[in-house]
Length: 67
Image (cartoon, rainbow, N blue to C red; front, side, top):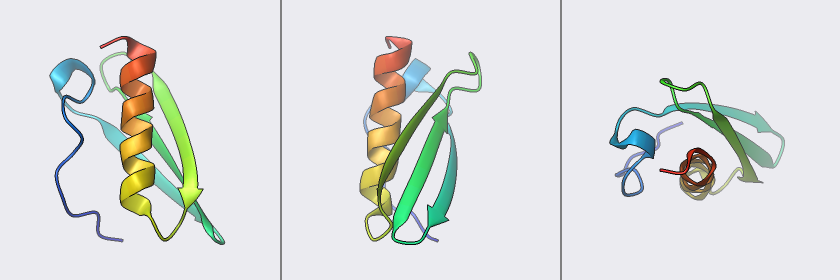
């Protein structure tokens, strides 16, 4: 699966974010992980919109870490 395009503005800590994608039928689960703190945030959505699911997971991680 190709996820071309820029990341949402200002990932947590302004640095690296690890992403894991798991597809289950029509759904896609994306886990975003801050490698410094180990904090995780999960987003689920339609498999036909991986960019939207990725963006949501990163936004949730940013909110969760307060950055």
